[in-house]
View: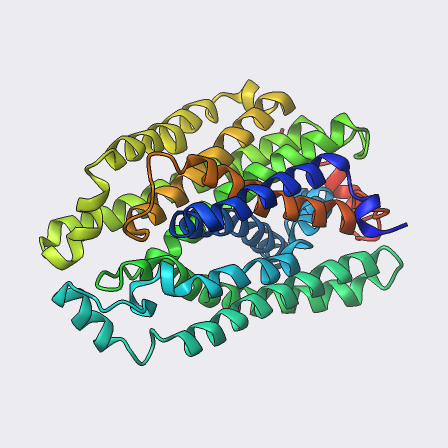
Length: 390
């Protein structure tokens, strides 16, 4: 039986629709498609990277409550290899997306001067090499942690746990550096004359919100399908809700800190990034993010009954995944190539998201097949299943 025939039909259909739309987009409006694809790629990848960070943080801190949910996060990180393949179009379209890689001479003297000053760093060969390093680091970390967890199911738990805790401690350092520089390279360099030293942290904060949101949805799905023990209960959703609330607050704190520092400095070259996003309709999207990514989930996650409900938490999870996509959209699209058909390009946004998200879903479904839904070999699994917030 082929891999495609074993994949669930819905993700395959979704991916197929995305492929068709993107192929049409190549001929109709390639510049708009390139931007839509970059948004879809960065938003989906962030969720997977957030899941990887959660696994390593839980290993280092010996978070017992997370053990019963860890396999769900590991199955998400199993999609990382496909993101290496999905990065190829970004390399192909780099001359369209990034001003510093453009084949057309830059007209703005300030931007041209900034690009020349950063030429040793912002050039395509070095950009490609760095990107390969980032992706390879994440894939290696994800595969080692996932395989170790599956190996634990067959015994030798103590030795594996020690190795994985050490790997996670070192891995978190590598993860922090690679995620930060990837955000600089793939997002911030869309506006090469502008910079923010905490831009990478901002991307990480959104990634963690997206990852906890997706994990909440997946755990609720697994419970409804009978894949998880009944002892994975309201207490586990309560713990996820507290973690989600923490990262929602972290996201708004980092975003506001970046805004207030740059805006109060009153340096035109630094403020231009926000000026663009405060007019032309982008200010409305910014308001939606303040309300939908922060205010509404913040209020909802203060209610105990909501935090302990699988249905309510899964709804909040889906909502925040939409907000996460819009957050990346707000960061990327205002700096997208000129001349793209913005008014009629939303079908390309949908197509690119269907392609990237659909292919990741197919990979997720194939790689999780026949795996235990919980890490049955972990020494802390019994304690995790009996976890209580009381």
